[in-house]
Length: 198
Image: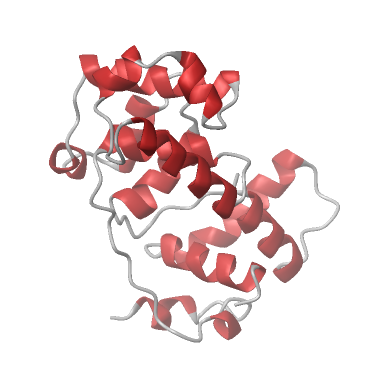
């Protein structure tokens, strides 16, 4: 069954579902994906892409191995546009995967909850970062990210969730999203499109 049939049961979501989305898992090694996600935190997509390309340029335009990131002088990473905190977090990711390698095939055998617990143990990798990895790195169909600013903005307007504090907002968003299971990732894709005016 197409996920569109299921999501159209929500009368607020239904008008947003103009075309079917397809999830394409990103064929990238996991530490590199997490590092690029850290670079993207609190930045526009365009700015994050520029900084990530500068980082790749340090390594001849290719994705670096964890041991290479660990041995890279902080000054080089800072010169690419990273803050001191993000420089630290990239190295924390690299050190973790030096000690505990994880391939996409291994990750595919783990549940969302297992990966969330495992990867958020890395300093600088939060719940949102892992949720983005589950959606776009592994192509998981039923992930919801209530802490994402774009999802929040869309749901506040569409479901009239104004005047709620942070805890109340998260609770209401999660209650609404329950009806979208097992296709919450697709619902997020359509909410992002709506918020961006697509």
